[in-house]
Length: 152
Image 1 (cartoon, rainbow, N blue to C red):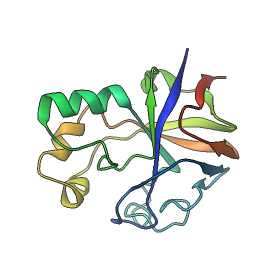
Image 2: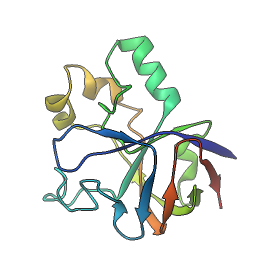
Image 3: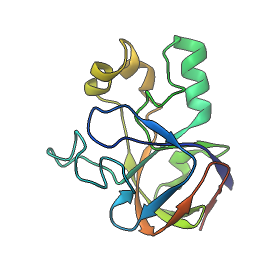
């Protein structure tokens, strides 16, 4: 089972817009370099519900766009890594490699009401059942769009 990275997004602080990047360093025990959670400045840092890295399936974004019309193509979903060709829930209890970095499944990432305050009405509902997962960075490495995702 494998898939690939479609897009990578980071945000420098909680509430700031997500920015697409063409390359990023995943840092063991921290997250993605320059992202709000690796810098401990994310919205959920203060309430201890943060994930080092979040992943979401491209197929879910397509479904949201078609079924709800909610904008999700430019990082409005607030997830870091968008994947294609892999069911993220199948990674439960597993380690996986993305580019040169190694990750470990942490937990599902359901949407919250806060995301709607940053985006548009209907975003929280659109993400229900499609919120993706959180993962921990086990080994540092560079990741880029089109990098394979391989279960170890």
